[in-house]
Image (cartoon, rainbow, N blue to C red; front, side, top):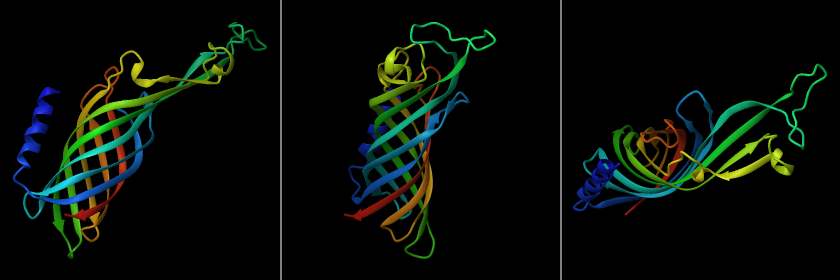
Length: 221
């Protein structure tokens, strides 16, 4: 973590002699989960802004500030059905009845990415771009919804909510790598695809991962 923070500071410091070229507004939506087969995808979105600096005619660097909603869903667990008094419910054959309990975790981050963009010119003013760079993130809020937990009483038997980051084993800090590619229509509007791959364990040995379709609007400074 410390090495990545130092690297980001050094990269930002190198921008001092450069001239800001563009103010960029971002939005995107797609899917997110944790790495591994024990989780399912849920919806994700991000929104934010950044400043793009030109390093060469085809290479730029872009630090930004984003709000990013991520999360994951666990595969439904098979649990024993209990009645309101906590007793096991039996079927006609005297065997315990089974039901499904689901868990959906949502996490909201403030993200500081630094992306490098390489532009491949087509018929001007159209470009294909390739992007890659590190990010650091801090979880500001989160909600875990548990449904079908028959060990609970009253309405909580249907569902109840917990604070995701207050649960044991959860970590608010996240670091990772973003990669992407897309198409610029007129040096003002772009559309692309972006993948974020966490390098830090956010719970247990699991890391964030997401895939988004992105849109952006650039204002020349």
